Amino acid sequence: MRWVVISDLQVPDHDQRSVDLVTQFVRDIEPDGLLCVGDECDSPEPSRWNKGMAGEYAGTLQKGLDKTHQILAQFREALGDKPFHLMRSNHTDRIDTYVRRYAPALSSLRDLEYTKLVGLAELEVVWHTKPFTFTPGWLLAHGDEGSLSRIAGSSAMGLARKWGYSVVCGHTHRLGLQHDHRSLNGRITKYLWGMEVGCLMDMRKADYLGPGMSANWTQGIGIIDNGVPEAIPIVGHSIRYGGQVWS
Image: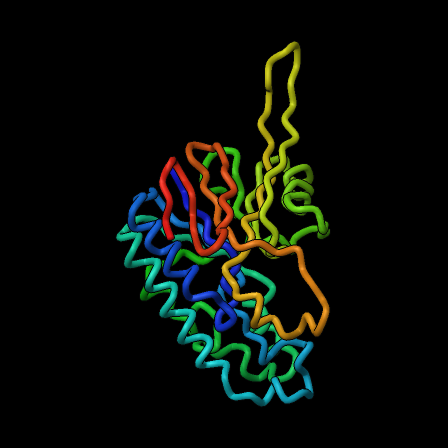
């Protein structure tokens, strides 16, 4: 199977032009399924960083959830009726964490579950709360399950070494591919890949970086074709793949 891996969207801080580009790419190459590494919704309002600050009272959470649903629906339309899997993430955990910490009496209300709030059932998107085996030898993770590295691909590779499976993840907003294959007597006995797929956010909206601060982030996506990975950068709102250019 050939899977396209969608990177962190961070709605409403997403780059709509890149989202439209990836949507068209999915429509054109007709993969066998879509994977999303999580952080599709930024959910800044209930984050611990906003507790007691103006952002907690912004009143924009529903708007962000609705926009997230709209973008996931955009990908579903491009994909058709093929499998679409979505991984939990630290940003989408924020709502549940906030309710349990500050309004525990509401925690049993089904309609406050993130999957309900963003309408995943309607979109036939399969939600995963643990690393998920989507093809033999490969796990989809978010990337916050282990330690982080500033070197692109190293966070995913660390998870791969820990779990003994190849790992594709997001969370770092970096694009990178590493391997730690095992061999004996000149023959590879185990392929072990670690791939991080970048992000689809608009870095200009990351006002938390502050003046003069920088981040080694890259827009991108991933493809895993019959177990073989490819990290694909989005440069100048263009994708180059298989000898073709999308822009």
